[in-house]
Length: 267
Ligand SMILES: NC(=O)c1ccc[n+]([C@@H]2O[C@H](COP(=O)([O-])OP(=O)(O)OC[C@H]3O[C@@H](n4cnc5c(N)ncnc54)[C@H](O)[C@@H]3O)[C@@H](O)[C@H]2O)c1
Image (cartoon, rainbow, N blue to C red):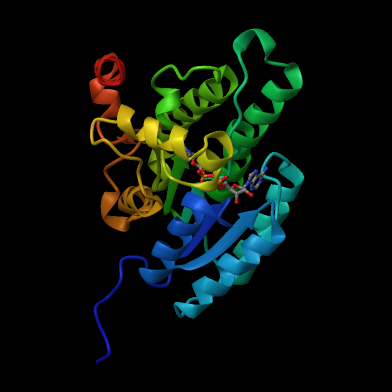
């Protein structure tokens, strides 16, 4: 039987950066399932096209572009192309990112610059280009992927922590400047999520151990993070702006207590 329920994002256009895999892909597909046409801006062309094909299987229109979000020229061109093709931009999800660890005393300027450029400058470039389009219609939702690493201190990741804390500052400041334009800006701070990014850093044993650090005793799924993004991206969330929501199985609430409990469990 045909489902005639009106979906939350019917007729809207959403842009998801880094939507080729992991959390970004889950966000793109949940948005499509809720009625949105989705543009995937992703450095990896093949995975961008694969996600776009899955969006179309869900009956929506899609757009895939090979874009490095740390390059403002590429970002402006791609967001201009999305606006031209769909005539509107309702939702931007700043999700693209890379995982990287380095002990502080060994952190190189190149490494620092790359992580900050992709996470923080990328979020700025995409937000500004999309917000210019959104402001024309007086409506927009910007959701950026921070991390609990932007709220708490991760080991051997000063560059990543600084970039994610920067995204939180950017989110709050954008929320102020855009408040009178009908545009909200919010951030999600995930705890550890089972994706390729984590698999590239930890082996199976390491992933299991990381899950034990979390009060709910497991890693998050990509769909659990996507669900929170859709909540902030929805039209009904108009009164929520400038906030950062941890989706972290209680990690921020636990603070150092969980680390202590974990140490005791292992000894
Ligand atoms: N996995 C976690 O535990 C976790 C926790 C907190 C926050 N996050 C954040 O969530 C976001 C997604 O993470 P994920 O785990 O799905 O990672 P992932 O590595 O699985 O996916 C990241 C995607 O971003 C793309 N990308 C990388 N650099 C890019 C660039 N310069 N321009 C455009 N696209 C680019 C990649 O090709 C990839 O498709 C990241 O911002 C990450 O920092 C992840």
